[in-house]
Length: 432
Image (spheres, helix red, strand yellow):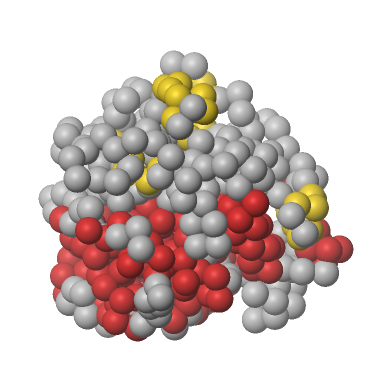
């Protein structure tokens, strides 16, 4: 008979500690920048930095790092961003309070001709505000953290990023100007709009949120009605910081649920899709799921067991309408823990004891795996991403903690800018 395991507190401790070790070892201590992924000469990701700033309070509470060390790292990061060049120069770090998606790990200058990113800046700012709330001790360093976090938030010109339109653009580039894409349909931009609406200096008008919400799609999928977004991460990112339990905007009032319940349904749909497995991929099932934006084994076409398969590289995979190439992301499973622990805990157990993905690298789970693709490394049963990503690792730290103690959610309930942004978006009820 197959042995059954149960995820216990010690295993959740280890998952958090191993994921947090990414931040410990992949941060430039001179400027606080966190590398996007474990690849040679790779740049920093400002989203990973924002998540790292959010994770330091968790690490202090869990004993992974001392408060003094966390303060030092946080202050280094905030000082860097406050003092880094803000201009239209192509080699600057940011402009109008926003920052480029990718930055050189050493100089902090724009990397890869990347865009000035609205969503990644929002994630960075959310981390800064978290730090400002948590590190509130009566000493010079912690007071400076609060001052810098507030100043950096106030500098962001959210209205400028509308570029004259009702909704926010995805970003801007020095030579070509604003990107043609705007935020449309439900996704991780929920956090972006809440921060933009809550700004005390350059607030978005309430009608910008209404314009964005007017593009929502309510769908019925696999036995559940929900506000649709395909990749699982889109149902998680805003929830890293904001506790949506019991609070509703106008849209959710009309549906009789909240965004937390919506993310729960999205998680259940992931499992149901994997059980149905319409494309007949290996490894899918009750515990084999987690389809999201992730690294992949492509791009390529190849025959596997007589079936012509198309594999992608890094791509926003989604459920139930695809794209789907058999690639699963362990971190996305763990980040759904607060929403549906009854299916997530068995899936974590499966990943640890059956797939044995924790044996493949120094930071716990690798970014993704694909049981339908042949292995590319010695002594592996199938394709496993060779990389760890900051934006994959840190949500593991944060969502395990929100599940266990509500730490980040409780902190951000005390952030006046988050509360004001929610109110201006029309949220009422619950803890508000």
